[in-house]
Length: 284
Image (tube, rainbow, N blue to C red; front, side, top):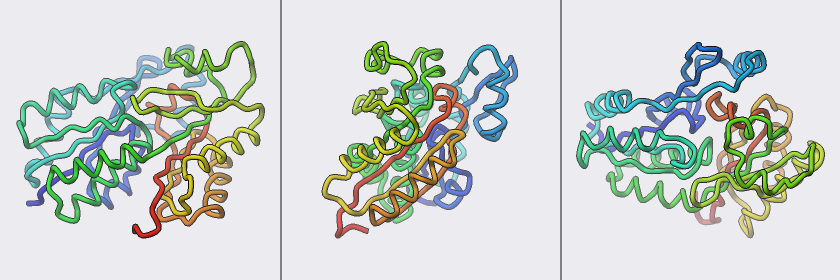
């Protein structure tokens, strides 16, 4: 029996291969299109966008039930003494509340951590938890490792359009940032409180990608090494451009290129993103 099992949710956008490699259990969020219910990975990204384009309304997304999380924890505790469960920001989903309610049934054996992020801003935290747990760390040490990465991880997301964000009611400060200017690509981050916050705006895709790399440079500071994830929604060309630019600019300790899942892209539409953790020269 191992000391710590790692649980997360599908908003982390970890691939099944990554979950298998690092022994991570991911509970799936769901969505409904035209009164038909799906789980997060039931459709490919291409299939999902095709279905969303045909629908008059945005898909409705749903968090996992308390019962689903109870079952997940029970399963994990059959082969682990404790569980560390890392989830999407409380400001963006109710998943964390379901996790906390489910965890109450297991006392001190299940520890829930709010990533205050999503996609690979969340995923890099989960991955660190899994790596530390695999080295035999205690539950408290795993939680501390997640909280440390939570403070250091940075993520920027660029959107081709604000339509989905506006329809879903999550536009918030982005709307104020735009003013009355149209046809802009807007970049936003997830702030320390776990909410969307605009950071830049540009006309045209190339200018937006350049702005993305400027933001990355600012967050990397004096660091020349980093862990990176490039996410995209129907934008493989932009993802490849960013991957190449990151690889030619920095010493890449770790690189992931992934497709963002339906639950996230329901609210963002097409676009791209970069998550990063600066790495000190003396660190692995």
